[in-house]
Structure formats: structure tokens, C-alpha cells
Length: 131
Image (tube, rainbow, N blue to C red; front, side, top):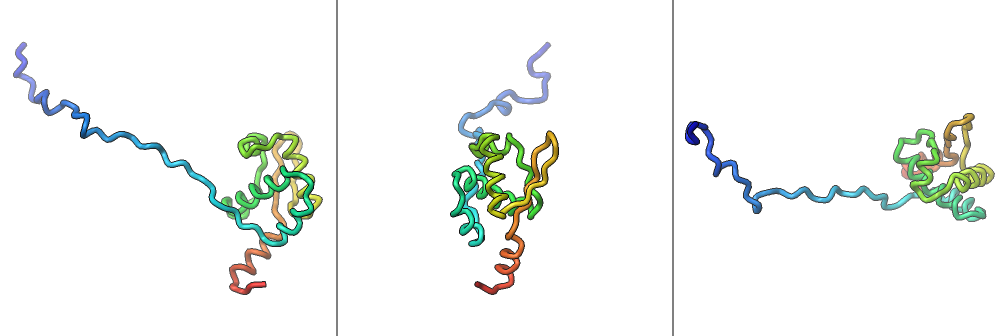
């Protein structure tokens, strides 16, 4: 066999290190801020646990992100936010007591949380009138 019988040139297939595009770091998505209705701020001032405040911020953000659908609070989700399952349940109970959320509980399943006082606050804000 002869080397010249192949129709391609080895020099054209050579990789030049300066021309190789290095994959960059994937951009990490970050949350920047959460906008709370003043009703929530006033009621959260009565909260006794830090976990309640942290869960409230996460819930408001998820409410916005999902388009106002009920938020499913799995243990995996709350642990990613730094809350243990016990802290999650205590915070849920306190937020419920403060009248900020309504919880749909199902046996052996993650609770679904519906936020209160957000719909009226958002509609008032979008109408252009300020309190």
C-alpha cells in the first residue's frame, strides 16, 4: 500500500492549539432579589423563626417564577435552600398562622403551598395606582 493513495492531507487534519476554542464555564444562574408586598413584611415581623423568613422569601420567588401556581415544597427543594425538613414544617406552620399561605397537605407527599395577599397586591401594582 502506498501512502499517497489516500485523498486527504495529514497536515490539513492537524489540530493547532491556538485555534482550539476552549469551552467556557457555564454561566451560573443566580437570583438577584425578591419583591415582597408590604403586608408580608408587616406580618413577617411577627415571625419567631429565621427559617420562616427564609421560606417566605423562597415561596415569593417561586410564586413569581412559576406564574402564580401552587409551590410544591419537597424536602429536596428546601434542603437546597438550607432548610431541614423539620425547619420547613415549622416555617410552614408559622406562615400559615400568620395568614400568609394556605397549605394543601397530602399523605406521604410534599405539601402544595398557595400564597395569600399576593394577587391583590400585584393587581394593584400593575394598575398604576400606588397606595
